[in-house]
Image 1 (cartoon, rainbow over the protein chains, first blue to last red):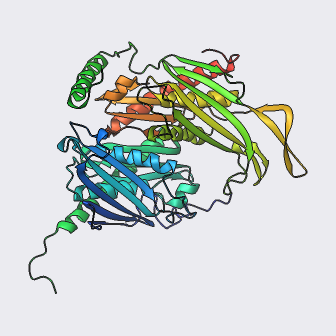
Image 2: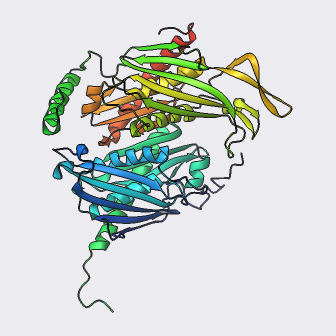
Image 3: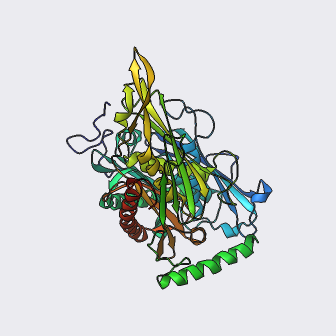
Length: 243
Length: 279
């Protein structure tokens, strides 16, 4: 197999980043009309829309819970978001990711605030360049906040990978494909806790925790960007400022 | 009797307090210690028609894995490697909470976690499963069926998949004039490079329980499965339930899991190695 060089002699990665450097992140809140809350995120070449609908009545009815609300989540990739066209419908990977993303977000939502109701979270990946589940969580968390769903914290996420024996932050598609490990992490930074954790690949225990520290630092930064994106939507322009 | 809603909520709270009180004394509801695995039994070669099979029980959880080998085309980006796929089904006879029909998200998660443990744990040398590079390779279909569910299907499924691989006799094929033909009666044993095992742990407040029972899974603040491919390498992790997981608790879990994984691996080797009967 032809492996591209992932780290050069100066210790820089294929896209010129340092090992502990995030890609360029852009976030915007309130980008869709018909959802109750929405957000758009770009992390390098990864582009995702997230939309939240609810709380509304549970459908189908038998799934409702009398003491708390229900959260549903669908993580879905557009057929054209990847190199080789993704078949329509949900793949096994998408079903698994929908589950772990839902569980991550559900952790911080005050479900008891909306008994017998449900909230739907939709994550639509329109362009995939690695880190789609983590960027999806970051965006979905913003969409939940935008929808006014009561939460204990905003959730932010990134992945740490291992390429050519070295730990690198926020891996892209190339690094995921040819690297040795991929560890997506989502945290509630103000609660200092992990809400999503997966590892696909080989690391020693020490590397794993070193990687977690890198992720934790980055998540604080992403969390800062999230609050800024939320403030931007609700910023009040002083009167007469329009030209 | 089934409870619903608020009543169920209270029942869970009472159960959680009870379990936690016991844990503070180092005890559990089934009289194990917090870091203790239930008894593991391994029975291999239980299905004659399968190329490899194993019936593993962890306490009262029982999982049957069978392997069928076929010859097929490799993935275009991996022309020099054989192929394996893992499927898992939560059979409706295994629990009142499992329903018939196509695999739901829990079953899909289970199969993907087992797949990850085998793949990243590098159990197989896939390059040894090639007949004609880029054209014909051995394909292993590893199918796990949960027959009885009494908590922790992850670890039992990984154990049974690995045991079935160790038991697997692959029918030999050869290439004659560009055609692939089976050599009658000839088989070869798969050689495993690593013996991956996983350890699932529940976090109940500040206490960790290894190999949780359904009641412990229900009250746990969160559940984490860690796959170990050797005494030093972590190959897979899956946090498989909602809930907050503080980093120091994860540290404790990964360390505790590592100790248990070593015991579990030697138990498995002993069970499958020794004339393939009970552990």
